[in-house]
Length: 332
Image (cartoon, rainbow, N blue to C red):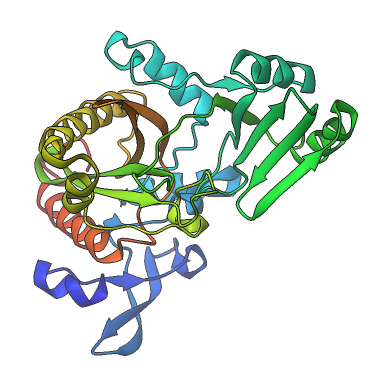
């Protein structure tokens, strides 16, 4: 962002919450120029591109209130809706129901077993609030042997009976709220698990910028395609052509239309608009046909690690727009 800022006529200063002096509304900041970091005292900026976790919790809320009272606009609000609440919100809209993978909050071990049975002994457990595929586990039950199998990012665990599995389950999953979904098959022609992350970023004039990319699991025996779990990506259009041939263009158009409609609807959930929304979509093959299924919607730094340049450009573009509009709207 510091390298690009000059092209947007933006002076970009870096600081933490501890660097703010609310007595005189200044900050002890760092300005990056030509590879050199320059320490300086500057007025509290009117526009702050913050990490969402800075304004979470009681102390974060107090900080947010102080900044807003000082006339600052935070680009990235703290939005920590869990996956179940997002699913429930989408499920209220008839247009999106066909794309949803059934998602349930797990309330007990017995309720989990009932979902496992309901979904043909093959489900995925996810932390209700989580990112980068951390803590995601596929659970299967082999009715012939009576074994329960937990597939992790690095290997599998086998449990001979329900008693052994219950001990594992209660040690791993009861301390955090989890959701359960039926396992959905979305794989490349070579058998690698994949999904499409549609990264939606706010753009000037309250429009959207889209960065779609495939996330492809590196192991045909695995079930996670997340880049943070050892996966890889490739150009979106090339991936669609390689996998779906002439149908690739239509898939692209339909998927971006879905992403746009979803982003608009998701924004209706919040008082403050999320700067970035990550929509994870599976492409399920049905012979020569296909369908889309939404794995989840991510509001926690989607794409920030893997697409730094694109996200930085979009953030600066949006901040430049805010700089021109703040004071002319209710953002002031």
